[in-house]
Length: 174
Image 1: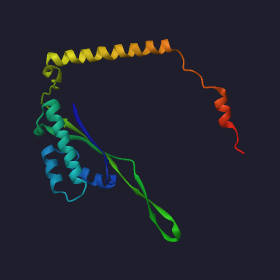
Image 2: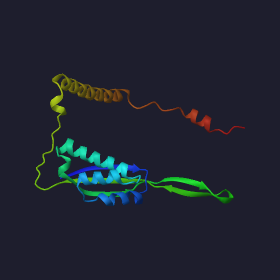
Image 3: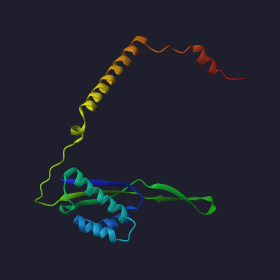
Image 4: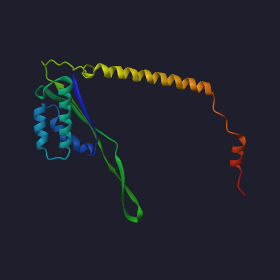
C-alpha cells in the first residue's frame, strides 16, 4: 500500500532539490523530518511541507500513524521552465531559463501493520431532506434537456442571411 503526495511547479531548480532529497530517501519518517528541519538549503522547507502532507494523507485516508511509515520512493522531475531574457551588449537579449521542479513522494507502511482504507462518510452524514433535494435537481435537469430538444425541433433550422447583405460588404470602396 502506498500513500502518495506531490508538489508541482516548485520554483527551485531540480538539481538543487535533488541534493536535499538524496539525504532522506529510504529513511523513517521521524528521522527524515529531523533531517529536513536542520538542513540549511532553500529546498528543505517545501520538501518538509510535502512530507507532512503525505503523513496527513496517511492519517486521514488509511488511519496509519507516522511511526509506522517510511519513505518508499521520492523523486524530482523537471517542470516547465519560465523563459526570461537579459539585455546584453549591442541591444541583444540573452535567454534565461528559470527552472521549476515536480516533487513526488510515496510513503510505505512497515511490515506487520494492518491497514484498512476508510470509507467515505459523506453519504452517512447527509440527511434525507438533502438527498431528496438532490434527486429533484437531477429530475429538473433531465426535463429541461428534453424540453430544449423539443423546442429546437419545433423551431427548425435558423433563417438564412440574405445574399444581398454579403454582396454589399464585399464591394470595394471607391
